[in-house]
Length: 246
Ligand code: GLN
Image (cartoon, rainbow, N blue to C red; front, top):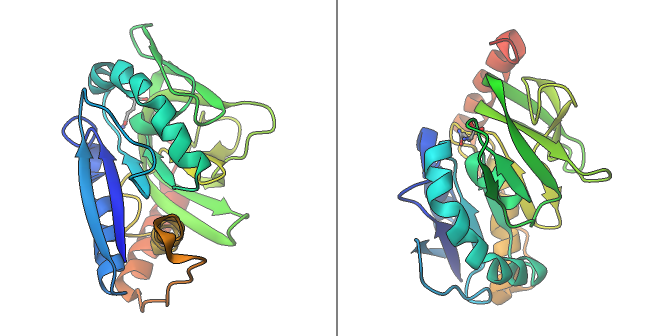
């Protein structure tokens, strides 16, 4: 099948090789006989929520976020329509923050978000930098990655985090939560990029996207993933040894 991926603002939000997440999705789809059609979505222009099976928005600094935030607001209803229709949405770091209601940046400027995730973010003085390891109880899996953010993300009461922090700072360095998950909308601070060392999440996103593309309920055949699991282990060990301590 053909999976249509909408990559939001690739020219602005692509810090720490976040673009690598798209490469992982493309390759894992290809070896299962599917094809990823990647549509870069930039500033301006209309967006159709139904023509895309998976949306992705990466991380960036405050400056880049300020450049795209108002444009993203014009695309909010299309994104909401897509999410309501079962298309998965993944936001990383700066992109994650903009999926929430608002981000108050390091200079005190309040950027609008699109409220797809029940949270808001306020920048603090000390950056939270280092390796992270999460327990995603809902999936029976762990996620490993690297975080570097000034933003403290505060989940609304009752909101579901993406995972519980085993090691690292997570959303705010205090709650023990990292990321957020609402239906098929996923947000996280994890870079590195996220998907090469966490292939289970890549496959989950692909299965959801394939379902949206009309493939019915899909269960992708597992791949050997030896290198991926080794990368996960290295990253997890680094987080356990020194995460959350910058
Ligand atoms: N500007 C945001 C922060 O520092 C996001 C940074 C990022 O995407 N790495 O909180």
